[in-house]
Amino acid sequence: MPVLVMKFGGTSVATPDRIRRAAKRVGVEVAKGYDVIVIVSAMAGETNKLVGYVSDTSPLYDAREYDAIVSSGENVTAGLMALTLQEMDVPARSWQGWQVPVRTTSAHSAARIEEIPTDNIAGKFAGGMRVAVVAGFQGVSPEGRITTLGRGGSDTTAVAFAAAFDAERCDIYTDVDGVYTTDPRIAAKARKLDRIAFEEMLELASLGAKVLQTRSVELAMRYNVKLRVLSSFEEQSDAAGTLVCDEEDVMENRPVSGIAYSREEAKMTLISVADRPGIAAAIFGPLSDAGVNVDMIIQNISEEGRTDMTFSCPVDQVPRAEKALNVAKAGGDINYHDLVADTDVAKISAVGIGMRSQSGVAATMFKTLSQEGINIKVIATSEIKISVLVDRKYMELAVQALHDAFELEKVE
Image 1 (cartoon, rainbow, N blue to C red):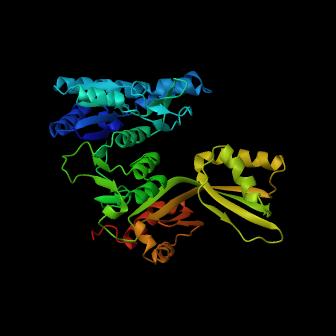
Image 2 (tube, rainbow, N blue to C red):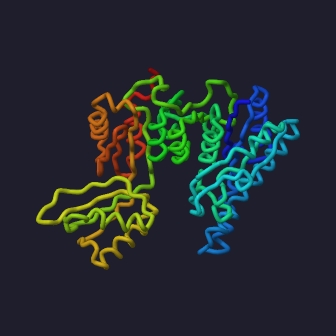
Image 3 (cartoon, rainbow, N blue to C red):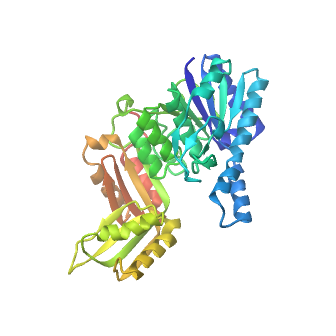
């Protein structure tokens, strides 16, 4: 039998009624002849509650026990889903990560999947089981301890299973009905895309779009797993949702496919740094060691052996960055006159594979922002994206203006 992977997020399994609704969708696919692997998240709000319990009990917690606790939410959902399917006369069984086993690294709370042996579940399918309900977000370390994959890790679990079992498709059920040209809550003209290329989705996910976890898109692109994002609250059809696929399978050919934004950004500038070979490594090495996620980097022209270095990072990582750089300065590794943090900026990005072959995207973007009186603080580009930092108060205006400028509401 062909295999289909179906992943249900927290809002899709938030109550027993919603679990029953999700189970009915699984039953439809079983009736079509699929063996189905269902990946489930914890019920909406459950993981946050468990994280709260950990923090209240032990602020400086043992990461191994943290994983044991926060992974339990998915176990409950998996069991309830399997019971619901059994009540529908669908042969189903729940699986925890260690039972598969989903083998991961030992990086607790941020583990990466290394291997998913197929023998156990494939053997059960051969014996008559039609649905394997697997607890997402979790695995087992080489030491035999429960691990978790980080927030949103159930998406990654789903894609990894689809790759391991050579599934026909991986359907991600969530509370939105697909991937949009931008956030519909900000731009009323936002349009749902029928298809989007892996590279575009990866950029959008990393730049602030919350539809899919970045790691899941990376895996899908590497193993060419067809992803479909769709709503668990709407009637379905074969054309429902958005298909994330190879660039060659994307029908539209426009320079920009979407506008992404990230509200919680900060711009940090080291003023008057000694300009010498190795200075960038001396700055960004300590930031990396401190776990600071640096994005955009700009270095000014050197004058009299001094230069300014600017970078962006998530606003909640500013204290960590300041501490790492001050320690490096105190130790003599770097020498700068001042460190200035602007914590009131937002990142706006235009993304599209069409940028490779069509010119004028940067000119249109900068002209549009200028006409709206929006000053650009930092610019960064790649082959298929242009990102800018602007004052946070202009974020929504910038998104709306760029969406209109690139006419993303129109269907080609």
